Image (cartoon, rainbow, N blue to C red; front, top):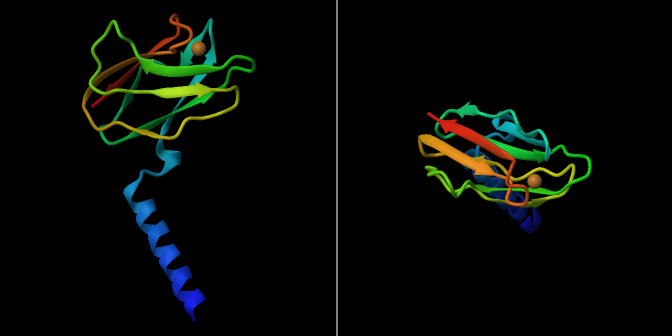
Length: 116
Ligand SMILES: [Cu+2]
């Protein structure tokens, strides 16, 4: 009986977690294609409250994401080093406006997210 109660508690907690986060499949995926191509697609438009996931689709090079210091973004965006094939956690976008980001390793890789 005690085990059943523990199971019920875990299920309840999991349910709460699912309702408070967006469905990952609804996130817009932005790929890190290569140093030459950069991010794709960009620019993109996302509804306020929506989300994005960065995926490193580059077969050989690690990339990251940070705000472009030359621009003013409505939201801080930061993804630490992503090895080839890896994806970031989902990033929820709660503020309307423009987010200018770049790869912090390769400054020529830049992208724009418009949140509306
Ligand atoms: Cu890079």
